[in-house]
Image 1 (tube, rainbow, N blue to C red):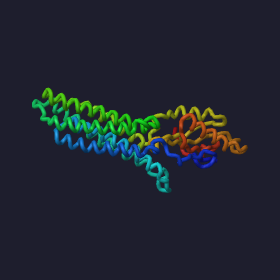
Image 2 (tube, rainbow, N blue to C red):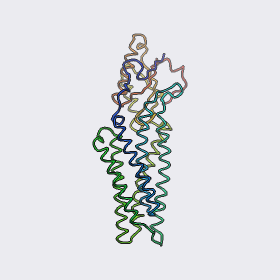
Image 3 (spheres, one colour):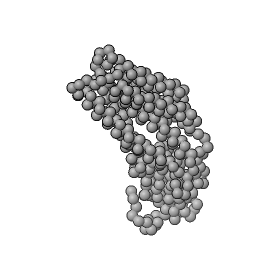
Image 4 (spheres, one colour):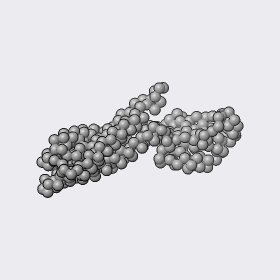
Length: 317
């Protein structure tokens, strides 16, 4: 006899979704930052073309990284509010991960191009031509835009990890803009136009690892790998430590989308739990264990008698 239980369906484990998260409450601020960052990014692309600065292009690419991160956070808020259907039982939550994977691939390509172009300019026998006045002007525009974004977020950046992450990203953008300005000043005063390429290499080295990290995380979610914060051996040990639990098998954990981990398992319990009415209480104890110790709020547990094993195919780990 098996008993399936998913939180939110009886046993007092319902989830309230009516209250917005801190990120959701400050969605307007994130939209404002996205508008500023996106606009400055486009201006810097134009500035890179006008001045011949690879550092400006790299800075624009770095801002594209941050714009994409903020856009994904906003998308997650919208998608999380979409109801599930019989065809999409988790709604459209996984769309955020698909977008992140595409975004990471594009950013990696951009970062690789910036590094290639910058290194080519550094090793070239001919010093690159650089319109330092235009480069300085567009660098200042980038810095002003980033400072404006920081002002929008500084008062709320401690309320959630998403808001804190967005603030740190625009702060990093401000530093890269300072690098562009410094390169323009050095090139103008000394004629060392390769300073532009040096700054571009530094910015490219910021973009590529972040893109690879994002791509790795997105692919792990799409492959339904065990969430990084979970140790299934510890989960199994905690479940086995609950009285009346004899065995745990078919234990699986995966990530649906950012911040939403799920788990399923078959739990073999004593026969008398099904006859003395203890099974429902035991199910509650197991769910509370997963929630309190591992922050797992979405779990499906099948309770089985010891004799049920012969009715199943060979179990997974």
